[in-house]
Structures are given as C-alpha cells and as structure tokens.
Image (cartoon, rainbow, N blue to C red; front, side):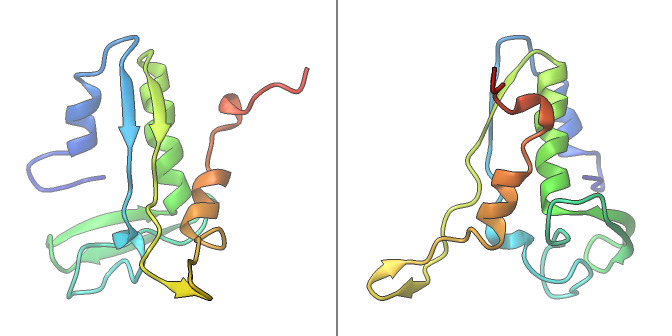
Length: 126
C-alpha cells in the first residue's frame, strides 16, 4: 500500500466519516509475480498472513507484499474503525468460458474474497 508520493488508501481513509459506505473492488491485476518488471505489482495468493519482501522494479522501492485476502481485511477493518460500512465487490469474473458459461473464480480470487471477511463481520449464529 506504499507508493511514491504517499499511500492512496491512507489518503482515502483520512476522508472517511462515520456512516460512510466504502466500495472495495480489487481487480484481477493482483494475479502474477509480486516483482514482475513488466507489470504492476501482484498480491500473494490466498488469505493468510504470509508476506514477501521485494524491491519493486517499476516503482524502484522496497515493499512488503501481503496476500490478496490480507489487503481486503485491512481495508474493511480500517473503514470499520472509522465508523464506515464496507462493501467488497471484488473480483469480477474473467472472460473464461466453459460449456457455454462463465467460469466463476471460487478456487482463487472469488473464494479468497469470500474467506477474507474479518471474523467481526461474520453474522452471529445466535
């Protein structure tokens, strides 16, 4: 979430007020290698607490890269701490077809999104 010139999420978070609604949409650009010199930095796959340290070849800066799910949880938790409600709209399905239907991505990004909801956001069973 570090970028030259500042952290875009920190700038946005500073504007959030209690009662705001925060729409979160991560794209499929999170797929790939975190240090690929030909494209924007990817996240690590999954929802865990794993990290990797990289020297970002495009931004020419050191970064700690987290999992896709970690980034979703971070933004949701940050917004909740400011009194906002988060709606996660990520990700949109890719244009992959099988047997005349769009292949859903429950095995990766879609599933990771579903499993990334902070425990405090799960509905109570009582």
